[in-house]
Length: 359
Image (cartoon, rainbow, N blue to C red; front, top):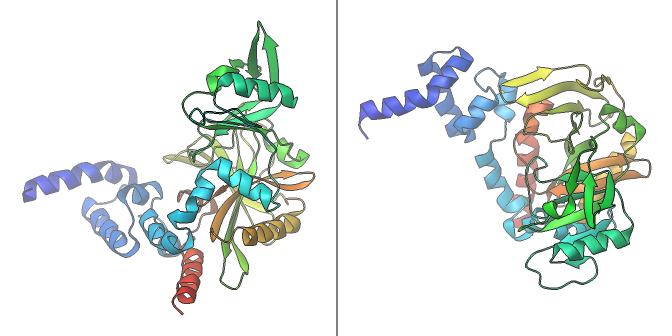
């Protein structure tokens, strides 16, 4: 590729960024190349997180995807990561070690070849299991790792008519149950009942707390970040990261919310005080029983030492925290929600384990 073609390619990539930032293309190119070299930042991350406008603290502490790949080789290697990536496996493991999760109603796998217990490989098997369970309210979600609640359907009532079963959603819309089971493995879990405090934020979704924990070689656990993910009216999930959701920072020590944002897209992020649908206050809210939630999550982290950094999605119920799922890997988006980078915490945990393994 000659010089003119290279310049043309660079200009094409940076032209939208020039328009978005209002900055000189040569300044942007130089700034980006520095961050790419030092922080392994991608152009998408540079644009999405507006790193050209961020203060030095955010830029220095930002953890890029490519940097995380280095740390995860020791912290969450692929040999153990499948525990979290397969929601059926993680459900069995967490349940076995005594970590509270929603009750598993059924497991559908089109290739499993047998019907036994809660497991089935035909829709008819699953429909029969669900009917026999007596549950009318449940969640159907992919067993494989998915992003931003993709493929999740919440059933608020199960209706039988004309010999078929129908899922009734929050807005009253009905979907044939058989449409939810196709070529991919699916879990059916009970729909947990969140506390009144969390339900007030948005009643159609289970609004979860993301608690990110780091396990150290001495078995101590640090909480590196906490934030709340809240859905919009009518949505099944809190849907963090893909747009159309609301997020609040939660002070790790006090449990008080602040910095609420309405995340519509990377180009439309708004600071807000009230939930755009429910009108509920979002900032300055003290999460009840916060100390209990944090201490529970620290204990849970020690029960799964194979995965040394976990992003827990936690439903807060009157009986205490219930784990919706665990994440061995999470996208970088949360750094936007908490308005700071988390590279120092991840690096510190990585260095501790690296030193321990090299003794």
